[in-house]
Image (cartoon, rainbow, N blue to C red; front, side, top):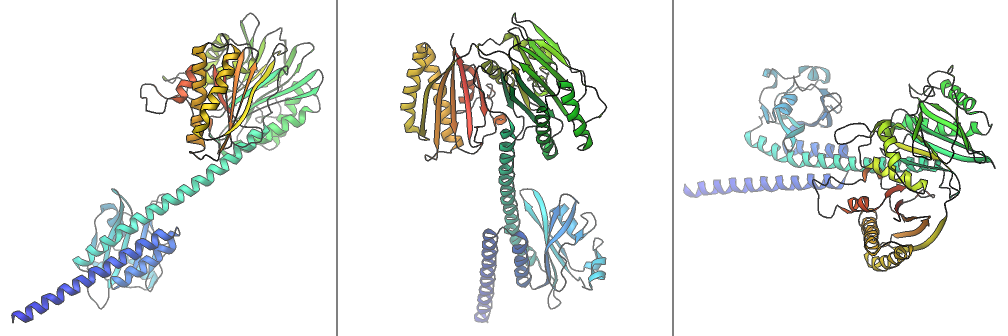
Length: 563
């Protein structure tokens, strides 16, 4: 008798071991299948067929939560009836109850359950007898439900079946989450690539830097990846230079397309040499013909006449134009007309001024709307006050200082400045022009050459050390963050002297780094190895990013004026 009992127990252990081994094989197969494919629908279909066979069930399915409809949608189905894409409410179904409770549901007689959705059987002809459901959970958040129906040979699902299904649900839930994260990552990479291309296109519409004595300089700081601001300037004849600055309302693709259209339209109309009022009126009529879903364009256009040192312009909706006189006093002109694209019947007045050794600033509202830590706007008053404080021979350096000042604040919109003033007194001299690999071993030689030039220009020993360290930090950031320590990358460094200003142009060929993401960190919470930008910000008079003329890589410009 004891021998028979031992044989029975041994057989039970053998059956249990075989079942466990079969279960482990299924788990391994499912995990491997999910890891080898990003086609989550196909892999889920394979999984539910394997689970259906393993559980001796008549049907199996996977339901996932649809965040838009807030319903559970069948993403994979096995059995005599294909219920893929079927939706069920989470508040009145056994599947929904499983999802909301996060607890496995074992229903021996489905028709006696108050949450049983009988209309599915009526539509399909399938007869649901028993139900076993287990939630698919990531962390503490349910993402769906794994369900099997009708144990074959008129048997009922057991407690062991429930435990097995719970075990099988874990790799499925994890694999679904991993696939989603991978697909999200791929989508983010695609969007980033498209945004990079869009930014290159937009930057290509901006005019290249013109050396002194050309009297107009401009700069743009994007609050987001793609800017809605634009500016342009162009020589019309020996004694006339046209200029444009604009700001498109709204965000996204529609605003970007309108920005391209508006800037091209204004440039095209300028060739007719109409007065600023007529010029902007023609552009307004064209924009009103094809209004873009309520979007509009704030813009200013005008001409500068070098021989008479006079400017005439028309302003449609931009912040006040700021005139800094030679005695450092300020005069402003508010826009006398609303933005373009609102009404074709608007009249656009003109203003005119003789610069008389002063400078005229055109700005977009990204500057005036910049916020401090208390969320207070810089406003026109704060901007004009800072413009009065900025002292520098070169107009480019003054714009750089203004942008560096604004960069330290919170930008809610793109910031663009266009400055017109005489630059006859400025002279530019090239001091260094070298290219080297993105290898830390190159830094010693670069520091030595740049340091010697900085000393020859006239900076003190202490200043030379600080400026050289700033350059070292900037190059190190390129190696670590732009090239990610890829030593095959190349870096180009040029140093120029513009009157009393030393300018560093540091260019790489790595993927674009959006300059709106790079600003000094909060010094109340310093982190090791993250203080390079703060050091540069404290030593240099100004620093900014620009897009190289060929549209590839990054260009960092740092400026320091001799005392």
